[in-house]
Image 1 (cartoon, helix red, strand yellow):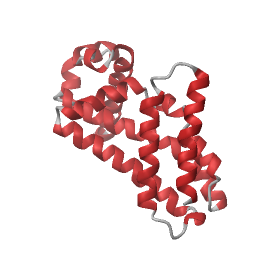
Image 2 (spheres, helix red, strand yellow; image 1 turned 90 degrees about the horizontal axis):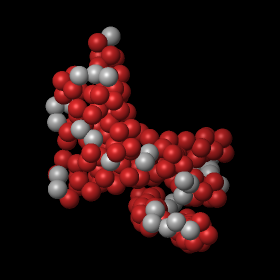
Image 3 (cartoon, helix red, strand yellow; image 1 turned 180 degrees about the vertical axis):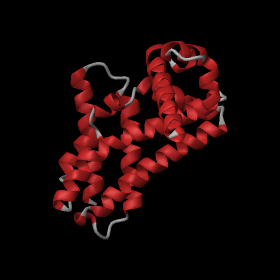
Length: 194
């Protein structure tokens, strides 16, 4: 029972940390502000997360759990048909639903820490490896991709997706955004056809 309460409390703190980071920026979110936001003493937060680094590491795990939800419709289609329609697959991977699952500003604020913090770098590497591994698992289940190097394919698809999201986040004009998006989607279609 105590373990469940502890786990629930940690999730609540991470969620509060995320909400404040989204609103005010990661760099402007302190343990004291999280405590005030959640109505709990900062000492309780420090009991579960003695350092901000540990709090950020757990936030990165939270990012991963949120991002894995993007695959749910693809997995459902695989379970029903043993393959996934490339259009469904690619539309989902390039969907703006990623933005609904997790805020880009918080993601990139955490990401910027990899250049100064080895622990955060390791956590981000694990996040990216897990996303690729999960995608590989989906590709492995698609009978139309039998015989293909799904590890390489997952890596190539993610390179396109990550580059696309980074670049597209700077484009404000919807028409230009859609044109660029189609270019990136076509790159993934080409990868799947090879």
